[in-house]
Image (cartoon, rainbow, N blue to C red; front, side, top):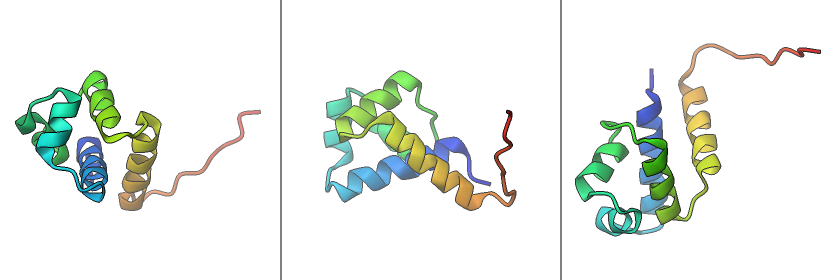
Length: 88
């Protein structure tokens, strides 16, 4: 089972490394400590919505795009198939 904070961390780290940016650079732009950002990326800390938004902004990402990627990551690890039921 993958935790949400781990999937968020993987998504943020992938975005940062694909941009060729350092932890220090993104932490400075997001106004969070380097250690805290590292812990978020490693899935050890769960960022508040405000800090997550700041990190996303520093990476030039929308929060919805990050959540979309996290959703895909979580779904790939789930063993249960979810179906949409029409409420109408």
